Each structure stands twice: as C-alpha cells, then as structure tokens.
Length: 361
Image (cartoon, rainbow, N blue to C red; front, top):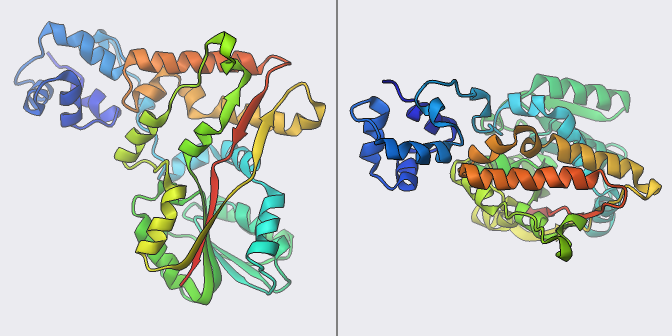
C-alpha cells in the first residue's frame, strides 16, 4: 500500500524530525513509513490526519490531496505577480504621506538633488512617493527581477519626467556600477533569506556621507495594535495570536516577522554608523458608517478579504504547522470577522508596525 505521508509532509514544509516530534515517534520511524519499510499502526492515522489537516482517506491514497495549498513562496515572482493588486492596495493602506514628508524635510533634511537606488523596487512605489519631495535634478534607479514590474515603473517615471534607470536582476547578484546618495529598500528585507548579504550590497552602493534607509514591518507590533468591535468584552471574542504561525514561517525561511526591529542590530553588525529609527504614526480606522472614510474603508476590506488567510482558509493555517482543530479555530474567527465588517456600525483600529531604519557608512 502506498501512503502519502512524504508528500503531505513536504507540502506542509515539515522535516521528518518535526513530524516525528508531533507524532511522538522517532524520525527513523517516519522515514520507514515514507519508504514503505513499515506502515503506521492504524491508531496513528487519526493523528496524522489531524497534523496534515486532511482526511485519513487522503493519507491512504483513497482520496486525492490538493497540491495548491503548499507553502507560500514569498521569494517567488509568481507569488508577487498573482497578488500584485493586493500588494498595491496593501501599500496604499499602510503608507502615510504626511509622516513620510515630515521625515524627508524635517528629520533627514534631504534638501539637495540626490541619486537614489531602490533594492527590490517592484513597480517603483517608493520612488513615486520620494521623487516629488526631492529637489529638481534628483534621479531614481531600481533593482527588480520581474520584467513586468520594471515595465510598469518605466512607464510611470517616463510619463512624469523623472530621471530613472532600472536593472533587471537578482538582488544577491547585483554589482553596483556607480555610487548613490541614498540607498533604500521598502518591505523587502523581511523576505530575504540572507539579509546581511543584501545590506553589504547596499553599503557597496553608497557614496561617502550617503544614507541607507530600510523600511519594513514588525507583525507582532501590528498585532498588538489591532482591535475591532468584534472583540468587545460582552462578546467574549478575542483576536487569535498569530505568533506561532509567524515563528513557523521564520523557522522555514519564508519571512522574518520581526525584521523591522531587528534591522538596527543587522546594520550595526554590518558596520553601519549613526543608526536611528522611527515608527510610523499611521493608525488606520475602519468605520463604514463614516462617508469621509469611504476610500480607506474600501481599501481596508479589499486587503483583508484577499489575504491568503481568507482565500485559503483552513489549509493556510495547516500549511504553517497548525493542527486541523487549531486551523479551524483560526478560520472561524476570520469568518466572524468578515460578517462583522459587513455591519454598518462595525469598527476596527489598526496600527501599521512600519519602521524607518536609517544609518550611514
């Protein structure tokens, strides 16, 4: 009999040891199950089904399992292209124009023409926000692997008359041909498996006296700064703690949920000086009953309802190490949240958890 234990284990991103720990057996036992040397006792099947979030029939090969719910690959251009519209809306929701303007003019005092280089620039979102605030004569260059994103960026910067240049290549393989006054990366470092290597590349790109600016998020800070009326005391509801999911992603090198607050340490480790950081003052309030918030309300709902957590349901959580019971609890909360957000008197408050970390060489 062919059991689909190895396929399910790999789909959920577990090692043999991790599965063995959850099954309370040795990893050698898992290996024997996967190769067919031995078969698991029938009493192990319900536990395996719970761990993988599937029926016992799937394990036994009597029912096909759905391969589309494998781990999210945040380092693949396929993921970002599939979610391009969501990412644009997400950035719009979290970005705070007036705070960024305050940083440019009052904190960083960027009052002379600058040559800017953006690592992982995407469609040039940060350049679109930065160039209008810089003196005439400034230029924007970006490094991006995806050709479609570069084409979109070129179209925008050409139309608006900004001096620009783009390099289609992998960040890790980039070798600077010139030096820049300001080197930046927006919401990029969390997904880098070798962040220190990227920082070293950024250092190589800086002119003496130039500034390195990294903008990223800490999901734990964002989680602490969230509240909705669904969690009011008389309801007995509480937002689940997503920390175990994020720790699973970090352990499997998908993304680092705490990257924003980790950046000063990494900059120090890489020899940067005068390291400072600011936390965005943006607080998002979702309130359908207020017509003045129509635009933000629409963006807020779009982002929440198109995230992987909504789209993939139980399988999203199972693929991050949850048992089927725990995954079902997460999904139930999201279902109730969706219903709550449809009410006219619903309200949610959310901080961004966005850090601006900057330093010099």
